[in-house]
Length: 186
Length: 170
Image 1 (cartoon, rainbow over the protein chains, first blue to last red):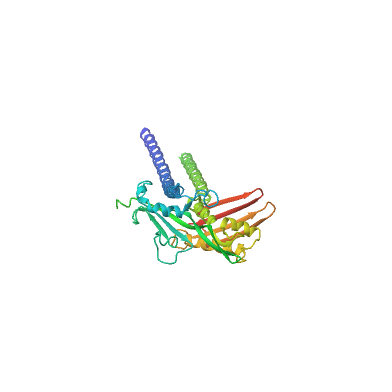
Image 2 (tube, each protein chain N blue to C red; image 1 turned 60 degrees about the horizontal axis):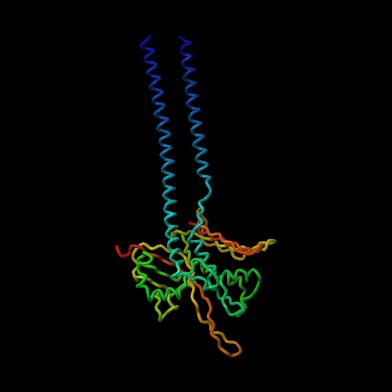
């Protein structure tokens, strides 16, 4: 009788241990699944944040005094690049080559669409051009971009009562500022 | 011998019922978690790129001229369209200029397509004077998805305000 009882108890213990293992395995599998899904969503969020930071960095350069429109174009504006100022900066870029820590800064016209081949801006063809490369003409390295307004002063010729007047007007277009890092190491 | 067998059977049945209850309970909890996860609202990101784009768009100089021969920016053109003014030099309707300019500008800046990251976009401008609302611009292109990059900008004085909503679906 004693052995029979012992056998029964052993069976019960075995049953319980199997049950505990089964329940534990089940929760472990479910937990692993939830953990994997969460980890994946965290990774996606981290990538998004990194991309947002990169765009903020490009904006930061666009809003720096060397690039920004200031109050020249009808009040204070954000994400506004003064192209006249950038052209002047391009002529003296040697003094600023390490100032922003970027290997290259590029400004590109987006709209109105430049239908001809990409044309680098020089003092001779400005403003009939599509892009400005500062620091170096190289397009190597990782580029971070953001949308900016590209403003400049333009002479507008008007005729009133047969007489011609020249008036300076504001002209703003839409473009991108592209900041590149690490081009020299590649 | 018979009563012992019955007792054993009923105990076994009780264990089975208990086990079944545990499984049902776990399944219910799992389904509740799953439904909460699935019903989670769509992912909306107030995006810096979209915000910068809308800011740049508002500053764009259009072909519509004001009385002093100065071309209007999109932001000022919105007011002209709302007030039903006309463009000074060419007599064009500012609402048509506004719609065409924004349509071209968004199309050139955000290329959409099934193979592109951006699958579609919508761009709306609503104006309100406190009593009535009017939609000046409503542009849609491509497909809409649950995830989108958002830019919501509003400006105005007193009861007059303008709301610009740009969504780029990814």
